[in-house]
Amino acid sequence: MKDYIVGIDFGKTNMRFAIAEDEPVLKYYTKNPYVRGSAETMYRQIFEGIDKAVAESGYAGNRLLGIGIDVPAVVDRQTGVIAWGPDWEFLAGASLTKPIEERYGVPVVADVDTVMATWGEQWAGMGRTCRRFAVLTWGTGLGAGVVVDGEAHEYPDNLFPEFGHSRVSDDERPCKCGARGCADTMVCGGGIAEYGREALVAGKETLLRKLCGNRPEQVTSPMVFEAAERGDAVAVAILQRVAVLLGRLCGNVVLTMQPEKIVIVGGLTERCGWVLETINKTMQDNCWILFKGLTKCEVVASTLGDKAGVLGAICKIRRKIGRHRKEQ
Image (cartoon, rainbow, N blue to C red; front, side, top):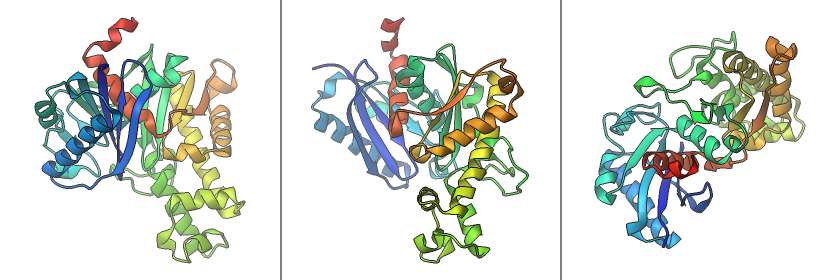
């Protein structure tokens, strides 16, 4: 039997478990819903998920080398203690890694989901052909990551790049971070759905009315994408607005770090389509070092789908235990 590593990725409603050996190829992958609760409830779900993954994959328990965990919260990288997260305050002050280390007797690392997704792109995605790029994780929130010289940047005090909380609009919509007009609250799932609700309340004729059963509070971002794909003018306008805001943000990223690529990762990426064209055009038209031809950059969709997080978690623990050294 071969040695292996387990990666865990906590999303908003699902947790993903994956197994890989020394290559960025998943030998096992599954996704299951989870429930938020006490620390003990979370540990139980993690233990059950790991045990199930090992049993179903056929690997031997004694060949496990380490475990990496992707979590939507700020994590102390040394102790695994959760500092803060908009949906994870119930775990604040608890270590996510210590009980797992004690149970399985292997090293365990945890980090915020945006850092892990960036490591995933560096190891298994864009990083295979590009050594300088930025990452935007686009879904229920807008996270960010930076790779320079083949290394994903992790900042002091357990922090990370936060392009998503750049102000890109005069809209005074409040963001969960406490500021107003952030890209995060304007372009992500909740923001897109809110634009749809506002259109219905304003009495606009749109397919969204049928999709939500004429109940504005039931509008979701997938409904907006579906309506746009079916040619609904209101939904198309909403996504055009979102794409312009993302394009402005990407222009600012280019001015800040001059990446070769900006990779969009996340659930909404699968439904980008023509939205990517608008993002790129807006970025090109509003960034002087691009339209003057002084540098080049393209916004592209990730090829990793919803696996970037678990791949990054595996990559990071792999680096901690020194398995990556054979590549150098």
